Image 1 (cartoon, helix red, strand yellow):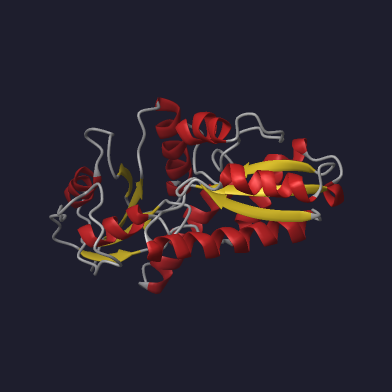
Image 2 (cartoon, one colour):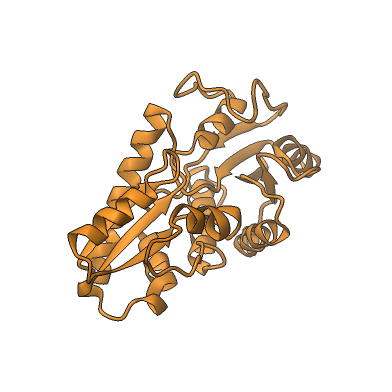
Length: 260
């Protein structure tokens, strides 16, 4: 009999609250999972990196593993480099933070998918900005994600952001919605474009980031300095939709493998 386990991999941060929110979400999703679940990080968090997580799961007897990338977009280069670390073919010749690192694991591995344009994410983001909206039909949204300059990843980011922005516009009844990346630096130009089209239209900036931190608290406000917009910096965590997404990915994999 195979013993399944789940390794959730997120980026990592030097900010303790970033780590805390991720751990709380993973722990909540693991409740009732009936299999070992370990949260690990791509970088920065010493003692809790990918290999540390695998070693812990193997100590618990796991020999069949779901690696679940807790990232907002399949356009993230980190999703690709984590896959490479588990032996998957690269999408480009980009050398990421892991370099040539390959995991040591005596387990069979299934590599999951990041969040992307999940059905619940639009509801999460609309809930985050509800306090900022007074008249949606006279307001525009600017959805901002990290992005990438690498062609294959840039296109994935572009498609995902534009599709999600349109979903937000439609579900929220907003007059207009646009998206922008921080890499390359597009946010200020997109905001200026929206304001030039209709100077009377209020613009709500919506950050697409997993947990609040450096990008939501510093980078976005700095890039948009001197411009007029509404913004509260709320990230996707601690909204319970992320816990539901994690639970769903875990349950679907366990069912597919005949474990439940």
